[in-house]
Length: 150
Image 1 (cartoon, rainbow, N blue to C red):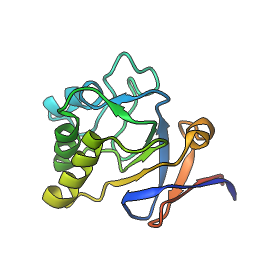
Image 2 (image 1 turned 90 degrees about the vertical axis):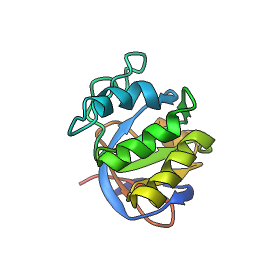
Image 3 (image 1 turned 135 degrees about the vertical axis):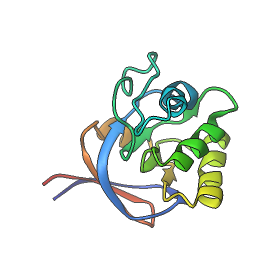
Image 4 (image 1 turned 180 degrees about the vertical axis):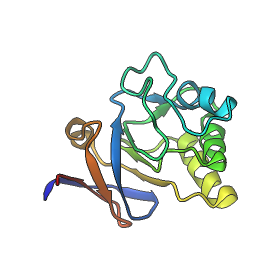
């Protein structure tokens, strides 16, 4: 049964059902993903100690809900790299407009890596205030995101 439905702009579409991990602050892609990537790990464990929402959590295969990404200009390359390694989150859902660095990473991942990563932006602040880590989300190719319960 659906609890809440939100509609955003499709950056990289697809259909997916999965588990949410929510960051209420800007996500530093380098600080969050780099440690796992450099270790050639089989999955990403959030490594940004300044972001308690994702620190220590498994992010591979999850639906990462966030306002925006922050950090250095390597952000796009980090996203492309983790997609190349196959350890990326399955989707990035932005409450705000996607930033240019995350956008470049998602596009490069789709073109160069043929990655199925989904990206949707402009879901709104209400989305980020409603969704909780552990919620089951259903994403549709048209940019609709539903928080579902069993």
